[in-house]
Image 1: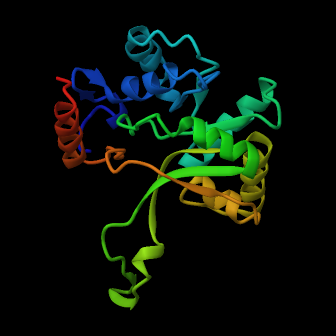
Image 2 (image 1 turned 90 degrees about the vertical axis):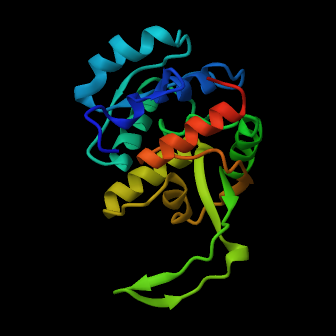
Length: 219
């Protein structure tokens, strides 16, 4: 992002990106507890600058993050286990910098995860995707079969914990939570989401997010 402040704390329409994201789940009746995973050296900032303006009554615990995203999520799952979460509970993992997620699919994600094992939100790919190796195009996958995966991603707790522990044991690093579950041979279902559920990682993303807020009537 090129700013001194980490991207999740930047302002979007007068609120921090992370505050907006957390509020999506705070307001949803199907969400029981929220466990923010925060870099260790930012926990004090989170407590002092972000939490007071949210009223996060569903706060379970603040979890110190790890070196990589996968390490952070594993820390969160271990905290859930220590908190006594039932193995057949559904856990959802969401990126803190996706504040424009429309929470409408949450109930569907939870129902499918409980029944099938895993469910993720995503959208069909708009662009032609090329597989490239050493600057040489080696394949053009069939776009009709390609989806851009987003978050939240929902799973039965025991399944996701097992997938993360197996990945750690094997030294496997996946690009999302579903990829760890998939390698166990377990079923993960795709639920169509919204193209507005963007991940804010660049200055251009922030401009787009601000425009989307204005389009739905928020300053």
